[in-house]
Length: 150
Length: 349
Image (cartoon, rainbow over all chains, first blue to last red):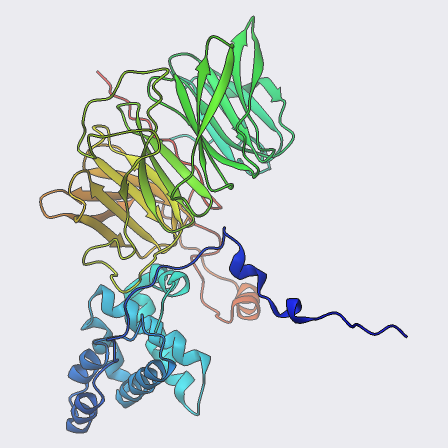
């Protein structure tokens, strides 16, 4: 039987790295993005001031950071706020956001869909319906085409 | 507005002649068909068969009456009408991927071809050799060029590409033209120079966190050449004013992505795309804002008729709703995406 006596190390070389036509995304400094302020959002939820909590949790989105923990934290926090809303208030919540806010909310909603837990999908679907009527299909297209997302 | 159905296949590209009495279309294959208007009908008058691959772009030069076509076979042909027959001349583009778009320059002495080879081929006629020669604009384009538009000064060229950027290049060819005067986009214009590039988060105040945006599908200069509009796959329309690089106004629209855009006056544009109707946008230069002006394809209100029990069950089965839905089919004149818009404004007396 023939046995390979020559080195196999070349098989572990990633040839795509050496392709001069390879498209590299531009790096955007994202080291300072820490996501929404947990303490502030928690206190607002406890006070029952859900509109403010929604505005607060949509601040400082961790879009450019490569730290996955920050992103997961932010997503958890957003889910907490969205679940705290009553069904009848969801509409008002969406109306209080501006265009960018609706786009950002839609990004978090789709992120939430990726990892469903007990009741999260039902809540997210409600928010999705209202955000869709506010933002239109363009809002969803922007979630799909965003190169860097939450 | 009149509707004429040419064939069953999709029309991938088209071009009008100078007085809109003839139209050259490609029915998604290797040929170009030219139709002549006679009365209310369109009659096929010529078939141009030379390409080996699908035709991806057609442009008809209004003054010199020449047609340039480019295709997936990496070639372009310039067609001239001689004795009632269209004769092709091959143009060697020197590209190794398909051509995607072609446009004559305003003076019709050059044309630009965008391609999947990440470059733009600017072609001009060298009379010594009786031959079309091409020059390449390569840097810094990093992906397929999807659309092109010439500036009225015949030198600047706007290109939208799949690397999420819209750029203005200089396509100055010293063999065929004089040195151009300065414009709002810049004064030094050697061939291939980039005079403007839409930045990574090139939208001020718009979706600034959505860095990168989407593929730039359509670009258009305004009539004066001072404004540039482009549409992108992230459903935005953006306008930049030459010379003021920081002010890029954009509108994140609620529609599906728009594929082609055209200025009709300095302040208003028409765009069309995956939502199958043309849309009007209005630009306010002083405020730097783009607003949605309205749909241009308002369907006639169909009369409400009663819905039978059978139809209710059918709807329930197919659509999970038993209501009489108004979206049985698309309500617009076009039933599928509009890829290629060509706007002409008639000034009547």
